[in-house]
Image (tube, rainbow, N blue to C red):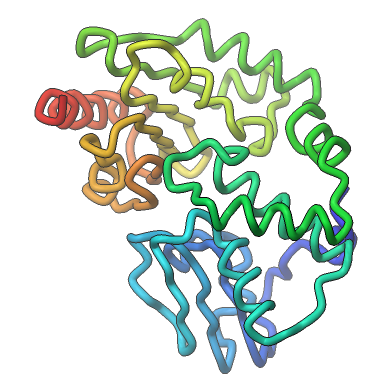
Length: 264
């Protein structure tokens, strides 16, 4: 629904002759997925991000871990260059900031974040319309997926750790797409008493995608995910780990229980 969304295309299978590649909100290059082979040979790489775990890849690097959203960094860059922000740009920036801050709920959301949002609203963002399309526009299949995930829900560490899992078989049965998973982990994180929520998703390549959310900065899920080759933020992180669903669940939850035990 966002303005200029029609410009998005699937990356070509073969490498492209690219002058400049810009990676936004991407902690490591591999997170670019199937787009990486197409642009890997770009003459110039620009890396704009706010993940603390970003190693600083690229030729021109702008990483601000204190920024609650990469969209906020882009807003500041546009303003610093005195470039105009029309209604279309404002809507894209507003959604980028809103989704990266958990709809302005995460602890790193600042007064400046709200000031930017106010500027974007003055530039033409229809908050009611945009919020409905962003947060209240899910397909029925996503609700069916949540129903099945809740059937696998488990608690441990005195109910401070909650997790659920999605197998390939369940995803196939429901016809679930990767985008249907977005935000489902927040249902676990919202439970009273839960400090860490973990979502395990079995992938077709023999790996398991692990997403983590924490309510306490004493429990750094980025540090946990980094042990398994991933990264992210203190309160939100992820990793892709080789192994079966059962194997990955076992070793990841062992680490989470240990960290929660030490951090609480």
